[in-house]
Image (cartoon, rainbow, N blue to C red; front, top):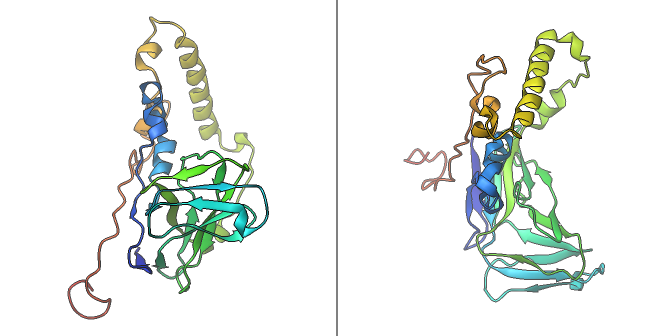
Length: 253
């Protein structure tokens, strides 16, 4: 699968694979947030578009475009107040194209909470569209300054396949219909309760282990390997510069 990003401005924002680390996770006691594999995998599930300028914005609670004030001491791709109603609009600086049937989800940076403002999400049919899109954030509190630093991500993109989503057949089934899965779940639940109780005992094995690692390691509760495709890290490629035009028959085709 290929995703192409065409810069639409002279100095486009930084576009990078999303990192698995977060400053707030680093600051946790013993950085325990990194023990949650679903969290770190989601962190890195896509690419980030970063603000090319540092700025501060504040909304006074009104519906007008002029009710948002943006203060930026730098020149460059500064966000705008195109819609009003407390919506802050970023121009992403790229036109993205994807293969047939593949769209892009554009949303806020994953697991990067920001006080006073919330990112809005969108899905763009980048397999045919020659239109750019904007990334929008909605203020959630009036008269509360919000600051973005230079190179701070404001958008997170990743591919999706709408036809695959429509082909999904959701099923709600009684647990008893899958006795093997139910058995393994019950074993895990019991071991989890025992482990958490043992954490209170300073001399216990659980206390020295600090956390259960079966899911992280990709094993079932009984020690059986869960799946060969289990991952503990995503290694996304950066956007590489394509020197020659596609189909030119030259290097870079």
